[in-house]
Length: 315
Image 1 (tube, rainbow, N blue to C red):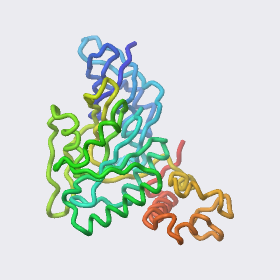
Image 2 (cartoon, one colour):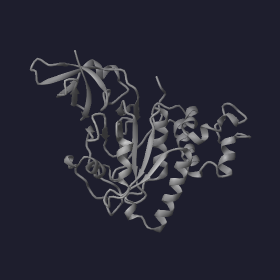
Image 3 (cartoon, rainbow, N blue to C red):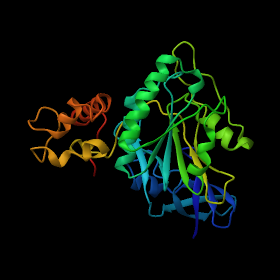
Image 4 (cartoon, helix red, strand yellow):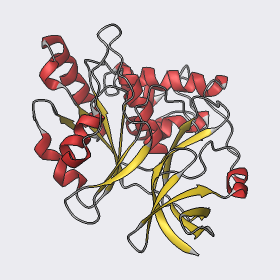
């Protein structure tokens, strides 16, 4: 039995970087797919796996994944009762976002940070396309930067096109495996082309008609950075839907750091922070210590989880 790391996933075929520093194309053993019937992709980029070479010596069969350090999932947008594993065994995630072309709602950022908090994966926020911001967008950017920095998230302002602020990225990425994620059209592929010029990934302009990005990355794939032998980025297709999976409604407030810090001060141990009296979280919203946008995101996710629209009970 041999071992290696999955560095590319197409959904039906996988590329494994073996311990012998070679790559081999592989597919899943049928029993493995059935054993994780709740996942649309039981193996993801970043997974360490055991595999066997097939008789032809050209392809391999993945027998099982090895224990994971962590993973990030979402509800599968095509199979609502299933989860989709975005990546496994990562050190951090770089969420690339923008307030123009396309304008990514802060609620999307809040969903992503909540999901990452649930899996104990640090998030770094990168606002791209600052060269396109008008005065109104600059003001909104300053507000967003203040909100997330006060919570404790790193926030960086960049423009890949104009090469603004990119010098901060090397020390952030060096020596780590970083999941690169973001809404379609925010400039992930352009950023990776800057980090690894030899890749020459396809990029595509945002539609002028609806300001929505187009998918340019089709499959998840891990790429090596030139900093050292332990620096990688995992590129993933642009995300348009981010349904939450594997979180119960009573847990959601724990994944908002600013709410988590106050929950013990609420009158009731099971406070939902909605209509209960003497709620420390609601008091913090009222006096501005918790941003109204963040609290609005919490209420939106809480309602969805309780209604079952994006939530399925953990088994």
